[in-house]
Image (cartoon, rainbow, N blue to C red):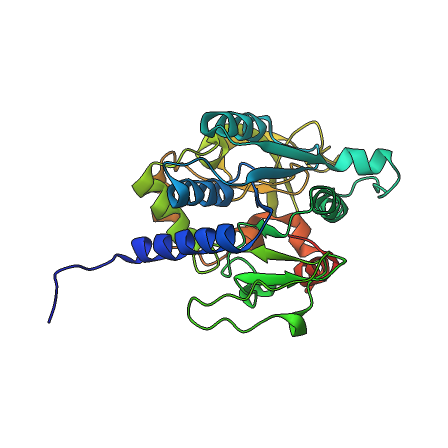
Length: 301
């Protein structure tokens, strides 16, 4: 017998994510939510807000800051945290460089260096659960990731140490010094994210929509001309209309030519694309065939 009540796929994904947030809040002592100001973390934050509304978020926000950011993203990050009254913690890669814990190589992205900074922040604040915005459709190393991803005393990801997840039953058991990375958006796709942004009117940094910007082409990718990235002599800078599919370190985040200046237009473009945003616009994921998995084993997001 039909009841007349049907849950849309977006509402089902939303319900699953809300359940995950509440499960973590009920079973862990010191969770934290990674918030970079990107689209996935903005959706994740909106889901967390709904999970505990009308109460305040029961955990802080953490941004691992490379120091090579787009100004629009940092402004959005700070404004959003202030609007929600959330506690924002910023762990800076530059602090680890200055302390000699990591070494910056000339011309390289600071993305790999974030691992040390992230693990330092987790240790200093004794976080036992860390919410991240990774999705399984982004990259093959993330496709086999659990919702509750076990990390050892060194923050490393070991595939053989991961636990079975049957339906909505999650195993958060861990010892002192270990922690769990939690991915509430695991079953979402890029298209789902944008449809949810459209449905819920989730605010994003303006970089995600079409705008004019000086860019140059490198290895088949459009990169934004910025103070942290110097074009080579054979890389002429030109201005065109672009948008960003993903926002990260300004030295390795590419953009695409686009006229999509609103969520509906972005959805139309996303529906016909055959490359994930990381595969198409993240230079740091091209370091090797197993680049993401190698970094995860070291403790990366």
